[in-house]
Length: 69
Image 1 (cartoon, rainbow, N blue to C red):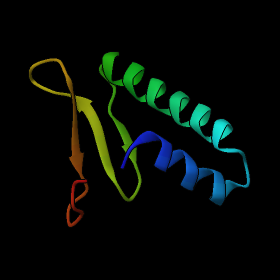
Image 2 (tube, rainbow, N blue to C red; image 1 turned 60 degrees about the vertical axis):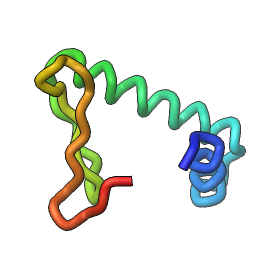
Image 3 (tube, rainbow, N blue to C red; image 1 turned 60 degrees about the horizontal axis):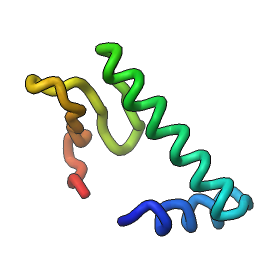
């Protein structure tokens, strides 16, 4: 799923405009990246966690029993 599709779904569910939802999505991604770069793990309940990989890049681990998209 690409950013416009995610923003569209977020907008419908939250009652905001697609532009506002895209801004919220951008902010969330920036916060996740900043947290991981500082060595902190970030969890998204029901989805998985983001953490620094062995190569220093951002890694994602899905929750057990969940499929990666």
